[in-house]
Length: 288
Image (cartoon, rainbow, N blue to C red; front, side, top):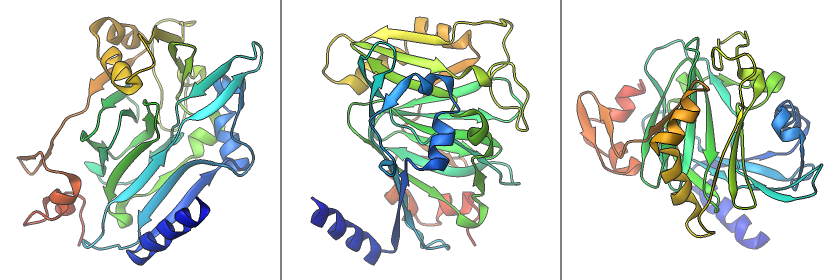
């Protein structure tokens, strides 16, 4: 297996890609365990083990190819009960610092997952629920997180202009990720980090709601162990569950199967869009 991994890295390297394994080091721990929800778990990830992988293409002009992100789930044990759980993998969030308005990154999902977009100073959060082939344009001036919602590792492709893709994890290092989502038995649980409720911070991040002590946990039962991602996708877009999330200032939104660039809808794959005459995506992202 190790030889296969090295062979893949060599192949990607020949194509101009660099591997970055985001391990469970001191920096990652400070983000994860800043969240009260994560503190109740003993994670199966040990020091130095990989939480997720970024595979970035190194070109800086319009010849650039998509980046890849690989997000597996995390085995865990609840500290008080000793029960096993599976925590849905995520990238734990970062803030987009780009001074420009509009799109900062473009994502194509290759499995069931969600993009959490917390726009600055809005008091609400969008959770864009995605399935294979769905596309999401991520704006500037927001905190964003990729969240796996399937039983297998999630892979996404993304495209951004390296000269206009500044980001930082300063907020997450202080208060942790916005969500902790996990499977407990046959229950899927979403816990909103209380540090994002009616709190002041430099980005105006999080939700502003009337309740001072809201119920921050929302859960629902899986019907069986088959097609976990599709079941969760369907549940999250059910009207009743959307109302529960809405009461917490969270909008559940289905991702689109297309992207609109300069007034034209594109339903092609990301790679096909990049090869389109006139390079509309590269133009949207201000490549020179």
